[in-house]
Length: 78
Image (cartoon, rainbow, N blue to C red):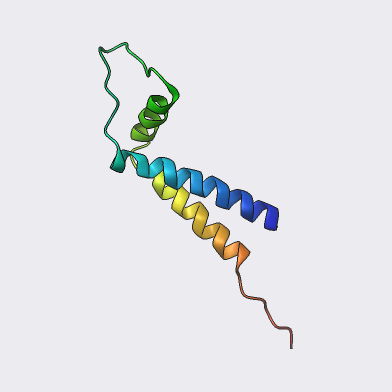
């Protein structure tokens, strides 16, 4: 169960980082309607802009879920 929680935490962190990029950087410049990204960074920015905030929301949900699974309180048996 901890392996799944750590995997969810890593995926959630990546989602949060990709989701925050549109708020920090401008959309990459393109020459025309059929021009594409010139490098990997521009591709990542274009994909993050196309997500329209969903990457940030899903990333936060995954991080919260993984934190709940990792740090849930132990139940005492009486």
